[in-house]
Amino acid sequence: MKTTTWLGYVSRGQAPPPLPGLDEKRRRRWDAEQVREFPRPGAGRSRAGAGPAAEGLLAEMAEVAARIEELRERQRGLLAAGRDQGLEIRAMARALKISPQTAYSWLGD
View 1: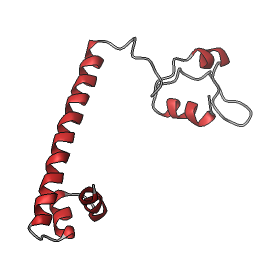
View 2 (view 1 turned 180 degrees about the horizontal axis):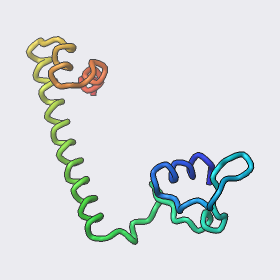
View 3 (view 1 turned 90 degrees about the vertical axis):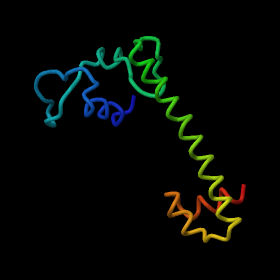
């Protein structure tokens, strides 16, 4: 594990507590065995230990993502309708809260 990864866990309060005292360079230290056995949180972590509340939260996240996709499709449809009516890209992008580059790319699809 990289030092920066470990320090990220420490800063988020996810790491075990450090050993008492500081080293000769006035830095905190951790028990090497505790660090090796530390169950790393993050993207690669298994959800096997996740409880029903976590599973419910993940389901809610998936539901929100699906609704966002529906709204994005609606934005694309409105953008195409605006183009057909001769509206300017910048005005449509501003109204849809997207960048003009995104508007151009959606219209190019």
